Image 1 (cartoon, chains in turn yellow, orange):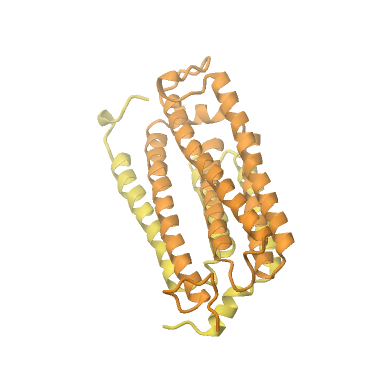
Image 2 (cartoon, rainbow over the protein chains, first blue to last red):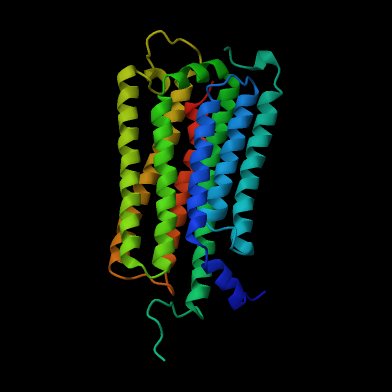
Length: 107
Length: 211
């Protein structure tokens, strides 16, 4: 579909305060990761750290990189890249994590 | 009507040209993500196999400096986004100033990281068979440093490339090449810089914050 002028306008007029809010949110989340790394969360620590990293990158991608306003194709390219990385990690870790002990290197 | 010299002849308008630029840039960024994605997979496999080694090795890194690196990069991402915003509102001088600030943050990051590398080399925290930290004999610790140097090294090269691109953009912005009608190169440079920040957001907890 041909983009209308309204689409372009929406895309090109982002208020400056939004960038400030994003930056503050990124700082708060960084402090959160740092503080939580000192707390013993056991097996959950990686999960929590990755959730915070995903939240931070979502802010960067949507607002600093403007995927929030952009239409179709750019979003598709980004989602495709994330999908293939997930596929690679999922497939390989599925293999490594289900091996039986004698096939693993000694710790 | 005289055609805008910034408009390539095969595009109908600057806006359409910018859309094509953006899509091409996203395709490039997707390739960069896959490049680092493969390294993250390698990291995941070895962290799973040698968790104790990774944990011990990670404790040799300075959490404080890693956090400083993180603050430097997220703030530089913010100044980059603001610079593009200002250039788009025809505030040429302020946009250039913020680009210079972004470059200084980039150089600051490289300085802090160089110090960290110097410290690692001094301690013997090196990749593979060169690893010789006193008192650390856990399998996998040397593998952690192999991945650490490859991942942060490749990332630092990206920061260096980003600084070079931003320096060129700062000169162009200062000379008034970008305004509310045309700012595609600045936007593409910004996207690259944000991607470098994005990768660091994942490197930071994975390398510095293993409990």
